[in-house]
Length: 438
Image (cartoon, rainbow, N blue to C red; front, side, top):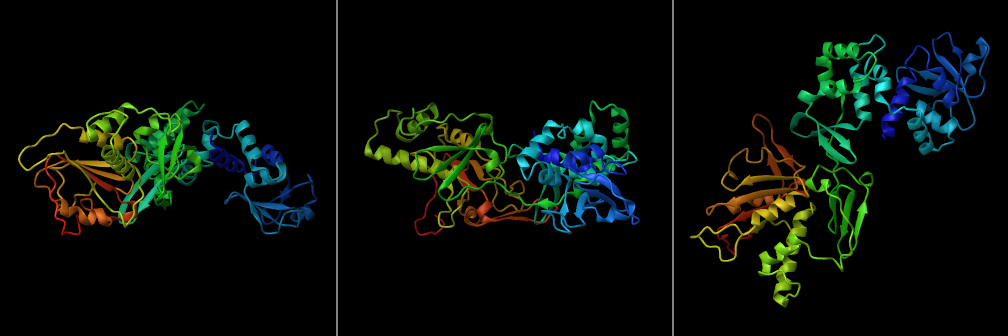
């Protein structure tokens, strides 16, 4: 159920004829009184009829081009010059300011049915495809265009229950409209018109105003983890998980965790799951609940690493890369298969990530970050080789990232929105205590 779409359809179909739909006008609480010499159409709130010489004393006139009503004369609770959409008047006159009831009314009256009104929503009075009307319909259906400084391309997403889903506009645009007309009595006629106008149809996205990504970001003491049944809000110092509805937060990118339902539990009395047992085995060599003081300290430190990587909040005072290696690793033997990559795969379930093999990641290559976007919150470098240049990552870790795609200008991803780095290796990691970067 989309009240946004229903309001758009209601506001649009009011003006489908030379004179606005009489039934809809009366449902709002308006009565047509006539057309003045200047061609302006007038309506009254109470009086149904007016002498010709009194028409311009009516309460409202309409501007069909803009699809709005303009207050022309004084009336209780109305000010001359105020502008109202049809839905605004429905709320004010019929539902006495109760917008929720007005939205429910639109749904019950079928104004969320795109198929029923499709001919009026994307075609003009002559049956030709109308790019502007079509773009406004798409906006009401929660399609958005994202723009980034330095990135000259069209990025379209559809917001579904608070999640941004990418749209392949080159191959799917015509199909989107074809799906809208499927089952219409004049489906073949409308389909032919779409085919004739396919160039305009495919370019309809150009009429969208570009907006920056508006994703939900974590705070210093708060992390938001998305699931199928809501978003888990975890706050530092609290042992309670709060489940929040998606519509009460900003937007999210799709993650694997959204396919799973979170069952709330008592954190104090929780049962240790198989994955946590795996963690403990990897850290202390066993999964028993009883831990020595040193083991408990090691486990807590590792849990803190996982929490750090799950949060997309970035603190300039704590800008670290995480490196997973093996105890006893050296420069001679390459001993792996300890589960390091498994940890990475688990983290990828919860946050948008980019992943590269250690041998293919060259920090000196100009386009090394060509695939990195501001939506990525973790950057995994898997299986770094023995001679991997960790120091070359310093700028990317401590500052923003310059993502330069071939043939285009670089897109600057600010530090606050750039990904955190996590690296796995089977080799010893070089360390010099005298260097600030380590």
